Length: 258
Image (cartoon, rainbow, N blue to C red):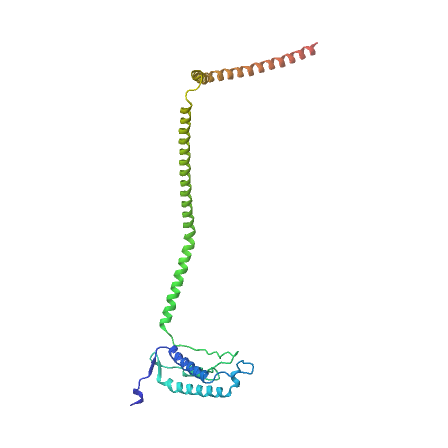
């Protein structure tokens, strides 16, 4: 069969290829750990991986095999219908020197910068998230302007209703107390019966009421008389004082002429 007619293995994204590489490396590491457990020191602690020469040689052979396998497979792979633009960036992760199957304690793996093809869906998602963020910020700003006023209005209305309710309850209590007092006083008076000297008390009360009526009727006349008497007294006092002053002045002149 013609080599150009063979279909490539299709992947949807670069993450799919990295997923395959990481799974192969993980499976190889699990197999090596099962076949070659860590070497123990005399005190029972695990020895550094560098001291196990046999394990290191096996890891190197397995790494070489994985690297060779993916090196031959990459030309037959496509990502989203396109050939892999930079196979070396994926093969670098298979380099035992940069990323061994087992990392020594305290040694950090080498960082590698990766670039992925442009994805229009992610760009649209970012624009959508930015738009949602702006909408939320506008909503928050509107709530900051409206919520305090609405809260204050509701609190004032609730307080007013509570005050009106308290006033109504107080008025009911006062009315009931007055009615109870009136009824109890009436019952007490009814139980007392007729007082001694009832006719004399009623007669004196009637006379007192009539006297108050006459006093109220005659009071304006008495007040007017008192006002006229006060004015007349001031007039007499002024006249007497003027006459005394004139007499004193006339006597002085007479003495001077003599």
